[in-house]
Image 1 (cartoon, one colour):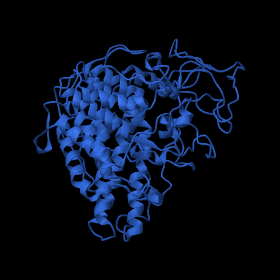
Image 2 (cartoon, rainbow, N blue to C red):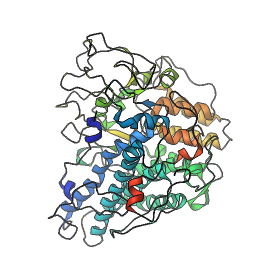
Image 3 (cartoon, one colour):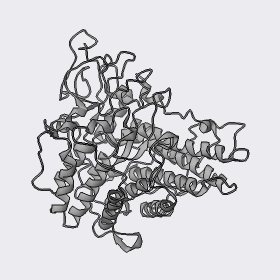
Image 4 (cartoon, rainbow, N blue to C red):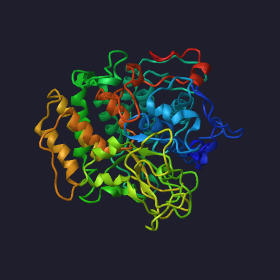
Length: 528
């Protein structure tokens, strides 16, 4: 069965959705170019430049498809079991879960290729508008350039995360390009972000059409994440698949230790006064349809309750009968080991739906397609032959009551929230003490925990394993789990439905489509 999730790309409805894209030799053509709109006859004034910038932002929505799938389903958080004739899809979901992909296998040709093409399309769009801005003068030009450089850097952040070294492209010339080393990509992203930061505002006054635009805090958040992962991302060889890859002892720009650099960037956000944790008992407000004003939001992908630009997460996970005006796809679930890791008194466990189920809009009990009461179990007996109700479902971003149909929810997706910044600082502080815990790190972790327990349950101590747990509890399904598991040296370990894997799996394969298109590309080690 071909599911709408494969076909329903987040296509921008903004003015520049048909702008001519520069097609990098290392990517596939993913949109048909317009015969009338080109860089030569567009971008002549501020309105046209702003439309071009909007198209670069709009590309972020597409990262919530294949990049998200590759991050979440390949980890211990999410599984997409085969349910009768649904969700087999040539075995690509099971292959992704089991980490048995290759460059030309079903998941390699689907998810890996999408995780390559979507960010590179964002890079191409940014390069087009930056090239145009070199020939025109508009109001707030320096800020627009900074936004574009930051967006391009974040697309490269995703590519570096998935594939390691990739071609770094900053012009609009169409030609084959070789891969830069992973360390070189890291340094490029770091340099771009540091150069862009001074021209970005601390805030956009939190309202109107500027909501969701990049800020100094967004730059600091990306850098803090990069520095925490520097033990992986600055290395072309020598990354461990089975032990912790520390930021301590890795030197980054300015001669700083990467752990200290991560702390510095976290402190910049903490001390800015622009962000705060949601109030106790209101953790869910970070994900509801009105979450655009969440005090935790730092870098968000904007969605709207309108056709083609809505968040479709509820469609991915809910049962066919759990919405009044649409039929969800009944696919994505979590593993028993992940569900059971959450404390029953932790409000964050509410993100998983388990037990007897209701229509999420009306609250009325619902039945499965055979007419039996719908019950979500917390375990899945066999991922190749799962029933309609097996597996707890993720419902972190609840249904938008204002949506016209199930797929057009206005909930925004945050790639970085304030809570994660506190956890990044805690982990970096912990690494400065060889992963053995510090009082300061423990305080930060308990600060995050305090807002989600009705009766306080602070941790008494902290170490690497407990920090990884806390990141699971706070950031589950927020596209962080794969990089967390790799940093902690457990991504290739055995877990539910997956045996232990080989070390080369911590990098995704360069998709076969890209190798075929660009003879200068070289495959990652370990893949045929």
